[in-house]
Structures are given as structure tokens and as C-alpha cells.
Length: 288
Image (cartoon, rainbow, N blue to C red; front, side, top):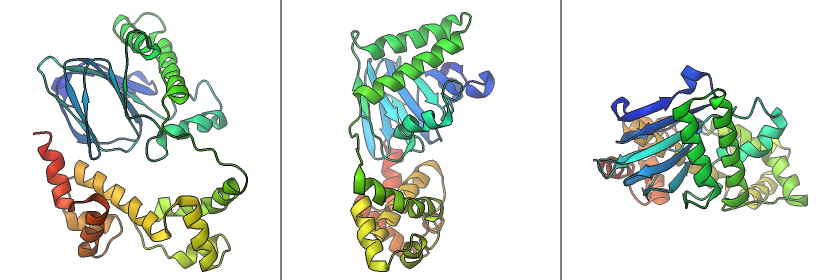
């Protein structure tokens, strides 16, 4: 979580009953994660923003997008460094749009690997520069209805990201869409139960396919085999737990669905290029 003595000013959603939080702070935050999107805008100095395996250097004008549930940490590289952090909850637009309209766009921000550029460099001529400036002014001046103005600015930031900053815009039509819809009950079940033993035969039966037909469909839609997909989900969760908890590796192995820690280590090494212990050590060493 953010270090209390590093936060110079803040507007917490818990206190204000708003669907977003805003922080201004100038030192470090340890590894953490949360269920909402985070936007970081560098105001002064130099920061290192660590997300998963990557270190992102940030200077004034740099804007970083961190998806929900992504482990991340920050490190100030100069004494007077300062960043503005915006944490956006999934119900930010619930007062403005219907649920169907919200889900039509919000899934871009909370459905797995980022659809957006990780870092965006903003100049004084950019729309984002003025939106962040207005957010900051509303935050500090707190005139009548400042909360509504800040919410409107955040919505405009969302629109800008959707229109200008996507790195992939998947378009699924016809047979592809039908295949995805048919596979969706399986994907939903896996997402909820990947920490348990999931048998491919049972998943095939769930959508009334033979084993061979299921394998072909899964690989065609997901680009991975059934076992590769489950391993990817388990390793993703293991990486998060290695960064944000002090649990022993053998316990993490069991938590994410591997009864055999030796096999877990083998899969982790294959997927990440280093052992779970080295992954954790390297991540914490980078912040020291």
C-alpha cells in the first residue's frame, strides 16, 4: 500500500463516497495490487514504476496505465519527485450509463493483459495534458461540484485512451464470434476454478463436444492448448502472490493449483525464465 508519510494530498473514495481516488505523493510504494485501474502521471523529478516484470522510467509528462490486479510498485529517484495517482473503480460511470453501456467499454480496462500502451508521453499540446491539469486544479481548489468535474475529466481520459492509445483492437465476427460464445462457459469456469484440478474431458462435456473437437476449438479460439492456458493463469497468480505476500513458495504452489512444488518450479522457470525465488528476490532488490 502507499506509505502514509509519502502522500502529500489525497481524496479517498472511502471518505468521499466517490468511485475514484486521487493521491499526490513523492516517495515510494511497496509491491501491491488492487481491483481497480490505476493511472499515474509524473509531475516532477524522476520515478521508476515497476509493473510485473518491467521497470518503466518516468519523467514529467509521462503517463502510465496499470490494469486491475497487476502487481506494481513505485520508486522515487530524486528527492523532489512527485506523481499524481488516480485509482478508478469499475462503477465510475454507473451514475451516467446503464450497465450494458458500461460493460461495452469497461472490459477494455479490466480483462487481462492491457489493451493500451503502458506509457504515454504527454506534451503541453495534448488533450491529456489539459485534462490532468484540470483534475489537479479541481482537486486543490475544491469549488462547488468539483467532484462532478473530476469525474467528467476521468471519463474524458477514458475516451481518449479508447480512441488513441489501444495497442490491439480485436474484431471478432462470424464463425470466430460463434466459437468464442460457445467456449465462454468453459472460460468462465476456468477463471473461477483454475486453482483446482480441472479435467479437459469435463470441460468438453460442458459444451457438448468430443475431446478432439474441444481441443481444436480451444486452440483455435485461445491460441493455446487447454493445459497451456490453465498454466498461464496459475503462473500469473503465482507471480502476483510472490510480489504482494510473504507466503512460502510451497504454499503459493498449492494455492495456485500445483500439488507438486517441483513441477510448479519447472513450469514457472519455463514460463518466466527464472525460478520463483529468483523472481521474488529480483523484484524486491530493484526497490532497495
